[in-house]
Length: 308
Ligand SMILES: O=C(O)c1cc(=O)[nH]c(=O)n1[C@@H]1O[C@H](COP(=O)(O)O)[C@@H](O)[C@H]1O
Image (cartoon, rainbow, N blue to C red; front, side):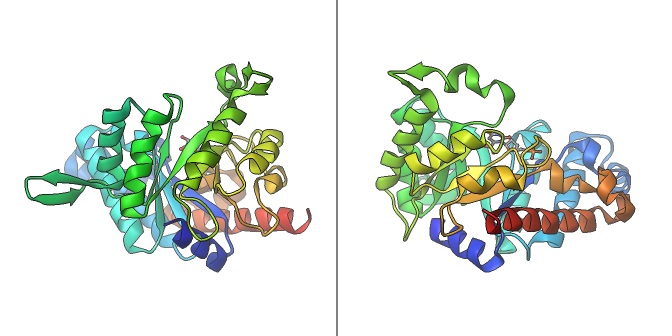
């Protein structure tokens, strides 16, 4: 999967992942009205609205980008119907040839992590049969329970040729509360980055590891250090757009070959039609606004990389 991701990034020339983090208040009124007419103002109605909204966006952007990252919380809040919308989204994106990064941020004690890994990336044994559950291509993993929580994911990744992105330095304002704490003269995120590089050696693709890292666009200086600490880890970089990250902040997350990082934007793309810049598209053409926002993001990142 890491090889497929790298190939698709090279083919599209777009080191970009579109975050599918649907909130009801981003969903155009006509989509909500139709779903509520059919299914009522219910969890089912909300899930249908999310699914139709996602489908419109995916159809509009699937030829431009290599990957999408559905954030499971946005679906989970709508209970079982929400989870069905998540699964439909994962399957639809895969059908469209997109690499799917399930943003599930799991991590627990060993046996529990193993169950999460099987449920999202692997196959569960039922009697003599095996079934895939959610079947994403990659998942995000929280490593702060230590190796026991991460290793089961790596084991499943080896069996299934799938990958993970391990949280190293997150984009949120309070991420430093714990992650920046100095331990033996180095911040905790650097220790975690070093561990990611070691875990990564266990499962290498052609040029990058199946074990990637998450480092927020909002901390470019730390990104620069972490790029060197984990030379073979693909870095998933959230925080672009809505959280303030810009193309110019991102250059050090990439290796000299222009590879090594993939930048996420969720609200900045999927709710683009709500921004003044794209308002002329109108609510009905929300997906065209998302397409234009993707093109602008590609341009912003390529020109930053060309000018470095
Ligand atoms: O793992 C992530 O994707 C993630 C890590 C991180 O440090 N910061 C972060 O924002 N994210 C996710 O990236 C997405 C950012 O969304 P926007 O701010 O709307 O682009 C959300 O799905 C977050 O959960």
